Amino acid sequence: MNQEKLFIENIIEQFRVRRNELEIPQTELDDIIGCATGLVAKWETGNRKPTAFNLYCWAEALKCKITVEAINDNMRN
Image 1 (cartoon, rainbow, N blue to C red):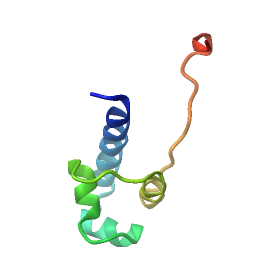
Image 2 (cartoon, helix red, strand yellow):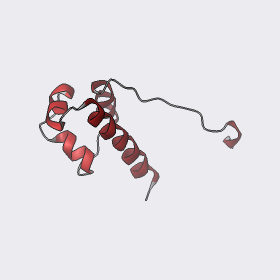
Image 3 (cartoon, rainbow, N blue to C red):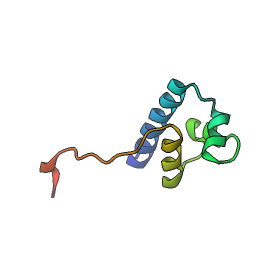
Image 4 (cartoon, helix red, strand yellow):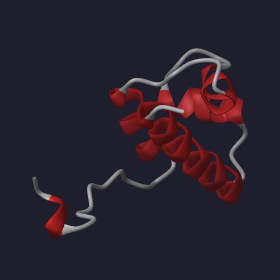
């Protein structure tokens, strides 16, 4: 599996868990984000890939944020 696919799947799984914690149905989240009905379901099942802006809006709708974190300073080469 390529890195992009793993990256997207990891974020989507975290968003799915967060959505369930907040007890927000997928269709309600579609409305909160302002996207087409059924789009969150398609993202969560892997039938569609969200854009970077979609990920930002999704995170905001779930009252969370996407962050960048250094993993190891010795990896610069």
